[in-house]
Image (tube, rainbow, N blue to C red; front, side, top):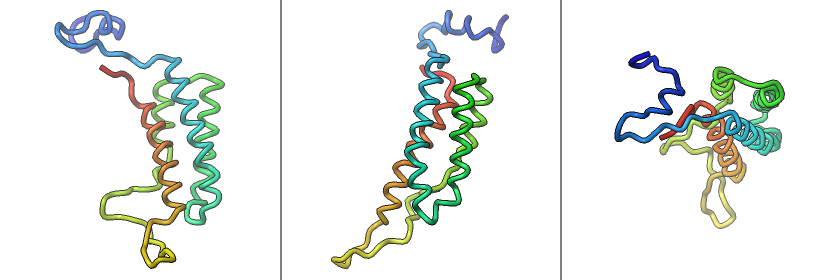
Length: 139
């Protein structure tokens, strides 16, 4: 077949002259990615449970963890990985002009709350792992 509808194997075997070959993510890499997401969610769950403002998101992350476990046990398609990836809640829509309410320190200075520093770091790890499931290949 010509043009855009060539089979993936043919694309890998014959890249365009002068261009690097694309490495397509294989099943073993996907399994590693799912396990990384599982570990990231498991690490985040205690913070979700302990922080009042985040507690309402705990069931959604438990559901994502259950789906990761199901996919690891029963197998998966790329479509299922993309649905999972998009289903992981984004809790912080952080941009340069937003910050949680600052806490006053004993010396009179202000800083981001410790819970936020911990939660943001763990949340970011979950988001990176989830987004990785949508990547189908790299040059």
